[in-house]
View 1 (tube, rainbow, N blue to C red):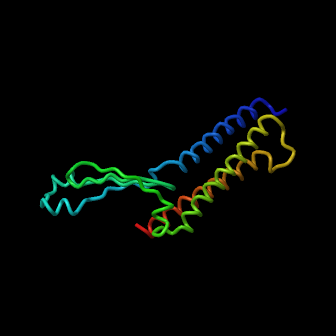
View 2: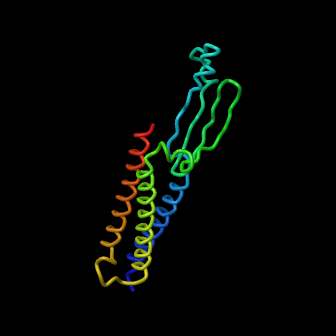
View 3: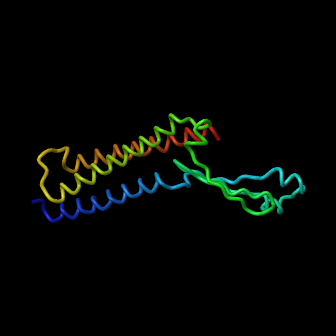
Length: 163
């Protein structure tokens, strides 16, 4: 049985691992990875809008890993629509990079779960191999962080080549 201090430390690490897994799940499911504003040039040109009137012709666009949306305003009110990445934007996006983003984030989530399991194991028992101890926790968390960073970099690369 580990000491009380190690139990507290590894229990806190378990809570942090649960938080990181939850954050990864939320990050994969959110629709607002990229946000921006769009201008309805047609409406602005028809009425010859000046700078203070341009707000009536501004819209918003956002999308994430799987879907997004846009609010277009051409002077007659907001029109909302959904954007689905895979059926519509697969032809314009680099789908290989998009799949790599998904796989990197999925692998990062897997290593975060491995780190969670080892931190729970360390809170309950004394590890007899160094890979199961605190060095193993460092290793799993570094791998999860690197994979998450690679996923974000691939997403930036995929979006910068298409936008």
